[in-house]
Length: 250
Image (cartoon, rainbow, N blue to C red):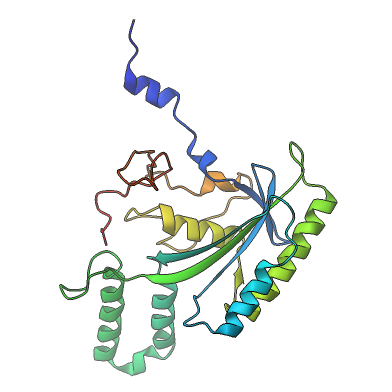
């Protein structure tokens, strides 16, 4: 007796939340706890516009710190479609000044804002190859904790000391890092994963619910993540986010 493939796919599909390990955030230490028994923390910043020998020396010192065995550290440069903060600042300054009591100026500024937002969804014109993005740098760290149990006080102290040292090192590099909290984490992950027209991050920060695990709040209900095989060896057997049909291709 053969089973229905669609039935099996629905019954035995992987829980989408299992793709994301952060499950809780501690505001006092500004660190996350993950489902795979790590303590995590991170920052977001703008990329540097250049580097010198001094920058390289500071980076080497940063990477020469005493990391606990099994620590994972990553640097990610992400071209984010989220320019809402820039647009909000653009409008708020002028709204407070009532657009100089000039209707034509108000219309021009609002049209500029709409033009820029439209540039995140499609090319501004035929001469511009890409779509508009805000490039940011994400630095994340995962420090091993006690397996099969909650982290011990020693685990938290070790991670906290490492976090303090790394933050000072990043500041020395001129990155001006902003620490990740539960709200910023959901907003950034949402802009990476939820690409629908009504994505939660497009309407302000996603609402954080302290009664639910953090990884269950990352993906919007209309986002579908599939594991697909591609021709690229880098992507083979990896989790790959298949963009919706209305998402622009760069």
